[in-house]
Structures are given as structure tokens and as C-alpha cells.
Length: 467
Image (tube, rainbow, N blue to C red; front, side, top):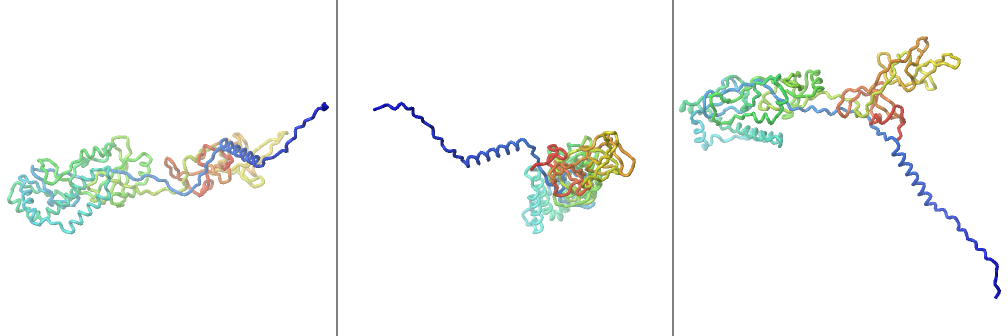
């Protein structure tokens, strides 16, 4: 078999190119997503805010201290005190309020006759007690347990009034049997109160922050109880006979000035929702606090047993466009006499005629379009981006000129209705820590449903906003 010396030539067969369309689409989408993510993190994030009409939420609820014309009636003898007038009841001159029994004969008489049916409560009596219970239930505050004791004493006072109603008819007979019983009649007409708290002789000029410490107040309060033993000079009851009374509240300096300016304010008493007008006066206390005295000429008897009274001041709420304080910015502008403003350009824009010079030194007036942001006292506020300090401008149809040299600032926000940050002046009517109420529909200001930049520090004037 003969050998074949020819060399065999081996060639590699080329495979046809297979294009995967799905992979190409995936790569394109992936690249697009990466570009979007990079652009998102590298661009500014501007948050808009829609302007709407509203008012500020100002806290007008205060807990004040009531001051009245109060006198304390002391006991002239020692013995057991028995009350016949209900707390909060108005008594006339020389009316019987209580008696001091040195021997306890009155108490023995009450025990002896307790089972004869003379002290049975009527339907009217039961209704009065039910009203006391309902009032306590609706106003009860679990943080103020002293209300429970006050309710207890009020019920005791009602029961005392009912039980002593028939006892009064026999009081003269009992007194005839025991000469050691002193009847205590009212020295003047007024409302009877059986609580002594140390505020009876205080005046508004003595006020300080310690007055509002309720824990100290409760420690110093004395509740006068029926059938208790009293000594000569001990207080029997308190009498309030003047309908002129006042409530002292503590406020901050700004609120102090606002209330003083109003002079009179409408007050709602949260205890019974009663409303009344009060005269407003400033009070200089013994510390650096700001205190307001609200004077009344009625409704004293409704709150005669209350020293601390919660009230709401029904002042007129300022209404306008409500915007967040973070949107407010202060910007500088050039001040130019209004007579130098003219119209020009293709669209008849507002602007000024600025003096410029050709290469040969000839002066030529150049129209420079500029926005007007405010107008006051014959001068207009012009944007300083297209003009420079020291520019000379001409008055239209006159030979008079003016050198730009004055500047001033305006308070405003950035309006983004047109897609860029356009400064708009605002007039603030009222303000708190978070929001401001600004005047609506002013010549160079905002209108309802405008969109503004929420954070004014995040943009510059005329900067385009990309959503």
C-alpha cells in the first residue's frame, strides 16, 4: 500500500452569527435604569407646596386664677359648727348661715329625730343630687383627684341643706333649752363658700408664677366641714358679695401685646360653656412674667367655689393664605423711581433704558427687560440679575437720568407655576412656629392654588424646576 505524502489542509468552519434580540433589549433597559438612578441622585430634589386659604391654630385655652371681693367670717366661740346655708347659695343680710353649739345639743336632737321620717328627700331634692352627680361625671379628670373630695363636700352640703330644712323650725326651741348655742347670721348679703385657700386678700399686683402651682395650692386649702369643732377666731365660712371679679392668666410677651391692643375679649368658660365679654388689662407682677387681668361684671356666682378656672379666649382668627415658614425667603432688589420704567422688546415687557456706549464712544440707550416685584412710595423693586450697581438709566421722553445706587429687601416665596423659581412678595398677617398667614390676591403676590417651593433654601431665583 503506497503512502500518500500529501499534506491534508484542515480548515475551521465558521459558525453563523446569532443575535439575541432579548439580550440587547435587556442591556438597553439596564443602561437606561442606571442613567436614571445616577441622574436622580445627582440632581436637586425640589418639593412643591400648594397654597390654600386657612388660619393659624393658636392655642387660646388658659387656666386662670379667680380673684373676688371675699371676706372670712370667724367664730366668736368654741363648739360644734352646724351649717344651714348651702355652699354657693346667696344669703341676705342677717340671714342665718350656721350656729356654734358648745354642748352638742343640736347634734343630739338630730340623732334623736333621725328616724321619724321628717328628713325624707323629695323628688326635687333627688333631682338636685342627680344633677351634681352628672356634672361631676362629665367634668372628672383622673389626674386631679381633689375633684372627688370637692364632689363629696358638695353632696354633703346638699344633704345638709335638706336635713336642716325642718330643723330650722325647731331651732328656737333647741336654743331655748341650751343657752350655749350661738346663731351666726350673715353680716352682709353675699354668696356662702366653705373653703379657705389663702387667696381671699390677694391683689393682682402680687401675682407670680408660684400662684399657678396647683400642688402648693391644694396643700394650703382648708375645707370647712359640718359638725367640726371650732375655736374662737377659727374661720366659719367665706362670703362673696360683689359681682365684679377677675381672672388672671399668664401669657407670653407676643400674646400679651395682642390682648392689650384688643382691649376687650370674649371668654368661654369650659366648665359650663358660658360666654361673656371681659375687659383686658395688663398686670405687673412680682416677677418677670406677663400677666393679663380679665375683668367681669356677671356670672360670679357660677364659679364662686372655683379658684382655678379654665377658659378659652374667642379672639378673631386671622384668615389668609397659609404657607409653611420654610418656604419664606428674603431677597435683595434695586430701588428705581417708577417714572423710569418703560415697555419694550418684542413682547412689550417692562424694563429700563440703560446707557451703553459704542466702540466710537457714542452713547446709545439699551432696553433691558426686568421684572417688577413690588411698588411702594413711587419706587419699584427690580431684579438685580440683569442690572448692576452704578448703571445709569434714562427717563423715557426726557433728558433726566438716574444712577442705580439704592437697594432693599423683600420677603417672599418662590412660585413654580411656570416651571422655574419666580420670586413673589408676601405680606405676613400672622405667624407661628410652623406656618404663616399671608394676604391673598395682592398685586405682586400669591393667589389660592399657586405652587411654591417648600424649602426656599433649595433653589435660586429663576432656576428651572424639573419634576
